[in-house]
Image 1 (cartoon, rainbow, N blue to C red):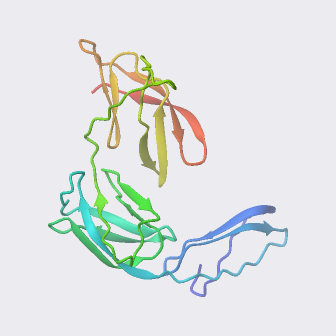
Image 2 (cartoon, one colour; image 1 turned 45 degrees about the horizontal axis):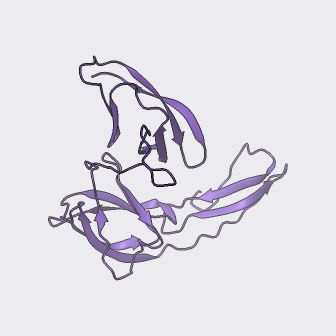
Image 3 (cartoon, rainbow, N blue to C red; image 1 turned 90 degrees about the vertical axis):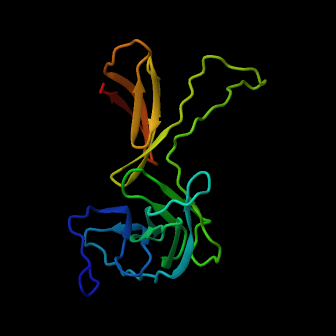
Length: 227
């Protein structure tokens, strides 16, 4: 929009299923309206934005054992205002405080590796309760047991944990359809690590995967090159 708040979108085709989204840069909530019908003569729309409230939020950035994580930075935003983010950096003890936090359900996230994203209805400003954010780099072992409906063990089952990645602002869920024929495949922050079987030479490995972007799944290939 220009200095007078006016906007114009050219080249829009005639249809009756459009959605208008507005992401203001000022202290306002995001705006969305649907369905919108665009006729041959065009359409005039008046958009009234609601102010974005502010509040105070404080707590600690901690590791899986509850120890403070000092000097770590996250970006804080409200799901109601995607363009307004506040940088949060923990102090020497892992503590943080934001006096101008946006209201509504909140999201804490990084903008570089390691990728962290913490969100939920429980994260709200001005609750008066400290909010601790757990940061875990994922160096743990996940183990368990696969059984059938009668509780009997199922040998030979292939068990994989999907890996999340962020690309072009989208959160992607990547699942391996078939594991490598020899060696092992493990998910790490920002990628996968393929370990050849003992005594086997390193080689190029191509695995079928599925990628889910929150809307649809598609098939793809994961190519792992030797070091």
